[in-house]
Length: 189
Image (cartoon, one colour):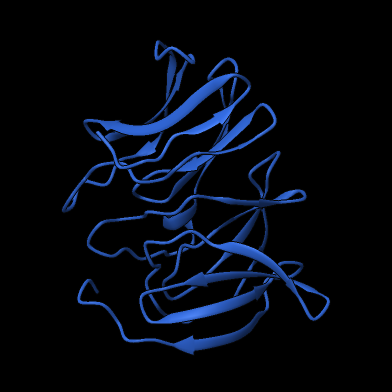
């Protein structure tokens, strides 16, 4: 079960869903046959427990995150789990009523994720190893149900994202929060 959009790569279709308490990455052939399925993390078990992250495909690697913020890199051909990192748990991340609903952003050697909470808003992981490269400061806010985008402005690469109470820009090179704009919090706090 899930709300994931499909992604395409290496002549396969990738989509997330959950079975019980596990979030699963599925690989399908172009005619819809399941090639493999790999557990990628813990499924959200609060309200509306279906998987939400659309897989991000780069070359032969598929990156995704679970409803509890477990980030994973999976071999797109074999389905082998290459690395995983309990990003929300290990960074004191917080959750809205529907858990995490973020598709991961990749730039160069980094994959970005937004745990939110009292410790950090955004982290950069090494896309090959899953090791933490940097952490931004915290806005002490829950992550939003959105995926970040990458822009170039005034000579800087910025990650633009939204939390439950802010829209914010992060310097992609070092995690510095460059600006924030408060917005009205939704009823899902």
